[in-house]
Image 1 (tube, rainbow, N blue to C red):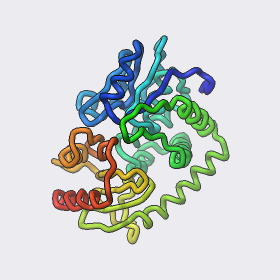
Image 2 (spheres, rainbow, N blue to C red):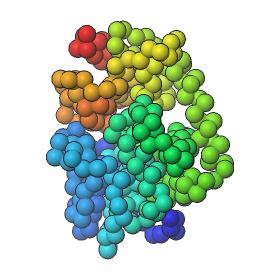
Image 3 (cartoon, helix red, strand yellow):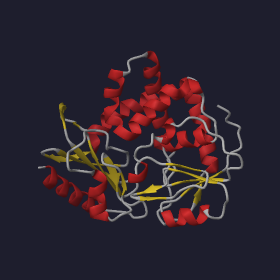
Image 4 (cartoon, rainbow, N blue to C red):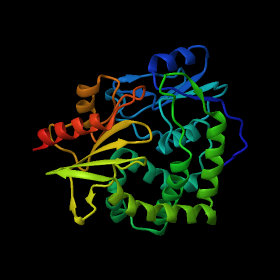
Length: 299
């Protein structure tokens, strides 16, 4: 991976109309997961999206093969994560073919959730798959302390320099840097503690969790790991946001539609996981209301 390649401008914004307005200043643009519920901001050269209805048949951006658009001036995002980073690398033609197993696992996690990793591993048993998972843990470890978030007020944030650093970190991870590997293994240990600390209460098929960390992948009861729940309502103390997720598809229930019904059309996500609008902050009392409503619906 050429970590010294000159990048186009990369911006992030939580309001689709503001992102579009900024992109309209340029001739050659691209967007990656610039999805806000059913609203998608498109690029003039390429649009990588896979959550909204019109694009749901697409693969995750991180699984795309290398492209190379001459003169690309700017890339617009609604959020930043491993999937969007992989999309950036694909658009810029920077992906290494040896890393394909890693990107396939990353794409699986983005569409199915981290709680389904064991399913993927059991059907793809190999040393390469184990390496991919270790790399995922290392990336999550770094990302947990170096989040890139769009401003809640809807202003445009230029994250080009941040992305450069992420590319350098990912290059270290994918080339078996021992320090990054150790950080990943340490992060994995903290997840066991997070299950117990974030647990607030449960009712029938639903868990309510509260933490500064992401918790919507922990479906096991901390008091009995043999018990797995159907849904999680997670409140982020750090970002004052609410996320709902389900362990497996539930006929007639969509996390995305549920959140849109409660919080409006800019609530984002898909059937398996969805969150409150990115431009608004919420209280824990709002999360309790969501929890109670999900309990009613699923029981």
